[in-house]
Image 1 (spheres, rainbow, N blue to C red):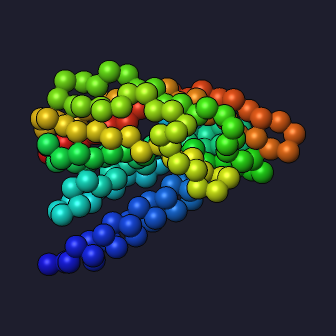
Image 2 (image 1 turned 30 degrees about the horizontal axis):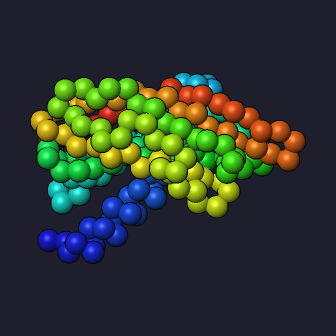
Length: 174
């Protein structure tokens, strides 16, 4: 039996590994056309880590990549999924732009405490990454699909790009 600390270290290592595998898959020919979602890597972590990432999606465009984690959680337990904007190819995430994530209505059995996330709800990690942490809670078991629209901006030395992307996340509650 693994301790809580060992399980947390395992989960963190798994998430980092997924990110590296997704990056490798995207850069080795698995990229999606701009505005399309592409399944890059699929894995499932079970047991004590029920609130774990189960799939990673990536959307790519000029100067940016958007990653969406998909969540496996327990009924009645709060969880979250992440929407991460990463600047690529000499671009930076525009810190002055009002980044926004708007989610559609939650399906029956799923609660989205916040359907509209604004820049103040996210966090910057340097100039290359911006992350929305979206809270969810399921009241019954099942697979739930949530669609959303993301508005983002990245800049390089010459120009700033403003983009809109459609997202879809799957939440699995057991």
